[in-house]
Amino acid sequence: MINGSEPFDYASLVVAHDESNAFDAVVPPIVQTSLFTFSSYDEMVETYRGEKVRPVYSRGLNPTVRVFEEMLAKLECGEDALGFGSGMAAISSTVLTFVEPGDRIVAVRHVYPDAFRLFGTLLKRMKVEVTYVDGLDEDAVAKALPGAKLFYMESPTSWTMEAHDVGALARLAKEHGVISVIDNSWASPVFQRPLTLGVDLVLHSASKYLGGHSDVVAGVVAGPKHLIDRIRGETLPYLGGKLSPFDAWLLVRGMRTLPVRMKAHEASGLEIAKRLQSLAIVERVHHPALANQLPPGLSGTSGLFSFIFREGIDIRAFADNLKLFKLGVSWGGHESLIVPGEVVLQQKAQPNSAHTFGISARSVRLHVGLEGTEALWSDLEAAMAAATTT
Ligand SMILES: *Cc1c(COP(=O)(O)O)cnc(C)c1O
Image 1: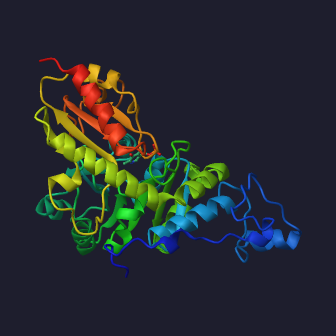
Image 2: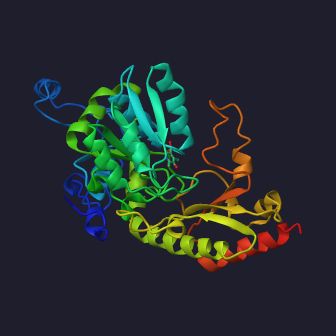
Image 3: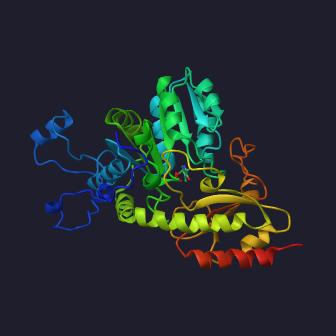
């Protein structure tokens, strides 16, 4: 097994495609087709019988999507991977593969809001119960696991940045025979490779760091072949959330620079988080590298964190005075973004909208992009000065 704290292996970004079939192009072609024709009746029947594996229809297998899947499987040290049309498609197809009515899931608290809503609506309708636990409290996790079917993790969590000891939690799940799944969108495989820490399945919103350019919505799950085959066979064909060839091509292009981008997000993000923490107007910064030592297996930090302003800053004026940080959801691209907690808490017409995901009214979430630390810090300082009320 590969040790999760080993340095990132750049060679895992190199995935071959069949250049002989693509004019010797160094970049894989976009095979933008819904169906693939057969040269003969015999070839068709061989394929239908499963004696020959080849593309038939792009909801199943598509060569461009396959390049992305092989690249991600290699990055996450998994045997196989499956690409989806969104992170939520990866989450819903994965979870629905392993649960039946009467089953129970254990999930860490403060999971991604739409995953929480999936659990509270569709899964509830299917009579699947979800128990939430604090992932930092290993005794509570151990108590909740017996009898559960699935353990759903996210670390660090995407607003309060609780960073768990993923290897220890995965061992607990194994002891109780529970399949473990983790949302690894925040750290990316550059900083955390959960399969090497003993987690069964790792998934991503590829819309974030994997894509890295804010131009694609996609998802992916990776893991051992026998579990990926179940998702491929039992839910993906019928829920139908397959990744498209063009989006797969954008992801392959984006992932070529993943390690370089992650290091830049880490350096700028941590520096800005430290400077914010030193200000009297800031009550608290939720950044995994500032809270504690990083848990084993998490070798670095990305550009997404949140902090809490004390009274004395008008958060609306702060947000409106920023020039480089744009108001916007999502994260993981080149651009810096801000989401005020008090706006999220006003979100209406969502199931279970009373749930706060640990978001407090005076908190602000930042995604630190690639514009440069000093330019971004000047932007924050100027906006704070313009928004000071005392
Ligand atoms: C965005 C996000 C998702 C959902 O992914 P989509 O690609 O938007 O469907 C899941 N988990 C985390 C942590 C996210 O940030």
